[in-house]
Length: 224
Image (cartoon, rainbow, N blue to C red):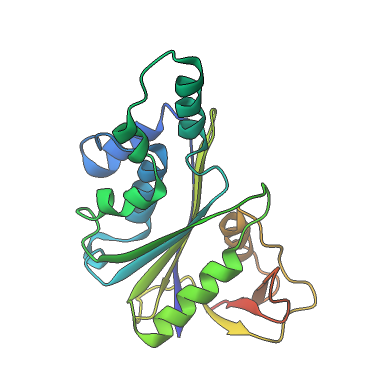
């Protein structure tokens, strides 16, 4: 059984994000880009300390990516107002985030970033399908799936933690199916928040997330 271990949505102002990192670590994370900070606070909130050493993968998508940092670099180059600092820019790239947080999440073995090209559209179905396959194959004990974005006035992280190991209090279970529901849930960036609403309700015992690409494939969640 693939267990849903945690459902989490976090929202910060850019000014509050470093404080959230300090609260999680007890110290600041130096030279860390907002996406790295979001990755850290979300991953630590999803995984209790006793599970952070287990073989772990992170799959995360982003609409914003390092857009703000890229625009700032281009402005410096085009206007000549400042000399670009290439190492500072490289530190903002999504591929750097796993290396910066691994000391706090020692079980982290793999991380993959998937950029999105349209606002309001996500690929949760793809992330969850890949995570479920990896867990069934025994590659990892747990996989964290996330949507992370930071904009000039807001930063957000939506997370789902999946596990193949027996859990004391799993939130729900999930599986892949080719029998898509007649009214599947749309694949949007804030899907974990909608999933949390469903879990808190008492209506349908299952929720289906339809793949926008493979229309016959769906991820189905079931209450326990």
